[in-house]
Length: 230
Image (cartoon, rainbow, N blue to C red; front, top):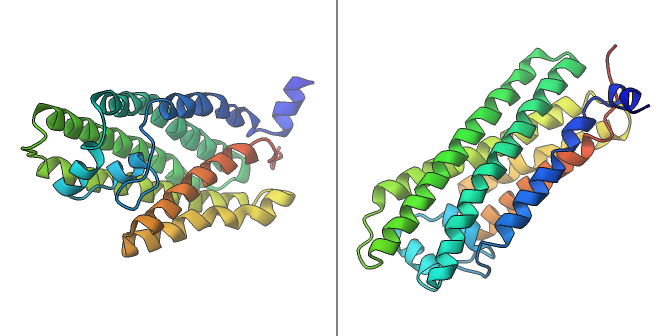
């Protein structure tokens, strides 16, 4: 019975990624400091999209040493989170390529690798910045770190938007109600373009929230997509 279920819904096993994803998110949530800063409702997102030494001072200066250490612990846990969600994206497109007989969906697998690399390199810059701040908060020589942080942060988030756009094109070929909601997965990509051009905290947060919602919805969709080919 279980074997037939997985054969009829080949994406279902991918939906099980929800378990490690939720564990990682709860673990990170218990470590990252809460509160608004620089117009962002999330200190974590503000940190990722910081563009100047002044931004870093505004984010880290109000934190206690314990909170800054929590920020680092959260970023270390994030390495497990990024490996998990990037693996989900990689295998989603692998299965989608087979089920929908669309060879170019291999692009989604390539995007998963780029997203993982971007997130790893982003986290390294975040850890470099907190280490430098801990050594001397009044003498932050972090220009190189900030440049790379901006590069890798946008690379990661824009590729996530692109991956969801690609998923929407793939799911248009699904059966049932999934086909009717497939285009909703293109919304994060559209918001990414607005956020990139606008650059305000409001639009950046709308975009990043849409990415989280999009990925979460994609995991849930995996429980409902039926086999397309024999």
